Image (cartoon, rainbow, N blue to C red):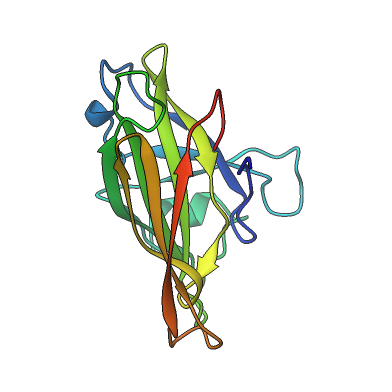
Length: 174
């Protein structure tokens, strides 16, 4: 099964800018510019979110320059875990982002990054969740397998159980 899904609020994080690196561990995801697609209601428009020290604060200068972003939007980097998920002998990164747009939702998104010609590239994105309605609690890469822990429940604020799912990389997808 291939996962290449988009964020319902932000759009898919499909490209990023960073200096060329020898290892994905050299990429500073806490100070990173992400390109979002689609952007707002116009798929042709290109929008970016810049994380500084792991956050994009609602009161940031970027909020003033980017009117397409809701003023209340807070984006934060929750974790980056490393391991070789593709089996090519090089580490990849599983990255969890969270965001809140001013309401009660606490959304999270998982992305898997690898290096292509020394540049970070998204290998896969996973569906957005909101706390116990599919929110991501943790993820790791072990023995070339991506293991994801999601919260599940009938109410967003109260998880009834945790769901562990394992994904193996085949050719160019999970």
